Image (tube, rainbow, N blue to C red; front, side, top):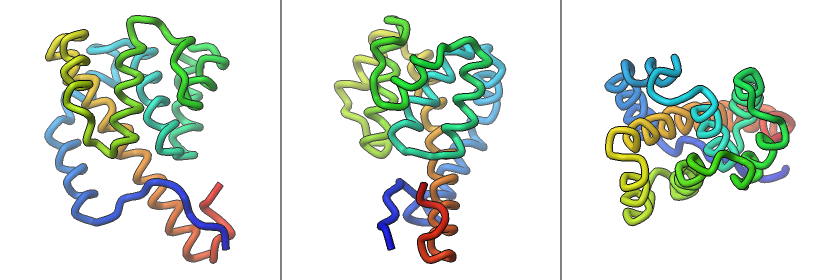
Length: 161
């Protein structure tokens, strides 16, 4: 059986902690999702940057569709999912790199990088960016944890694509 290689929730405690975060920030998340705090294209780029690291097939499908509807070109989407942000707007590249770094470091980013994000975008926008990152990370880990369950109950036949 091929090894399951996606990031998942490792404990119910981590899952509950993220649920609490989402509940506490639900108003801000709603404003982000409505495009009121950052543009829809910027939001979808952030979603894809994190999803590219975590490799959630459900989020990849869903946010690729939303990004295309928002007007992002398919070649840029492919590059973001592959980890490259060169085709993205220059003013968003630092945030996209931070999103990838944040996901890669499992929510424990380098504090100098975080300070650079705050210096570039301001404290409020940096907080909004981080909330968007945490939101998609929750979706990614939830989808991947579900896939791990499929993988286990089917003895590796499903869930590891």
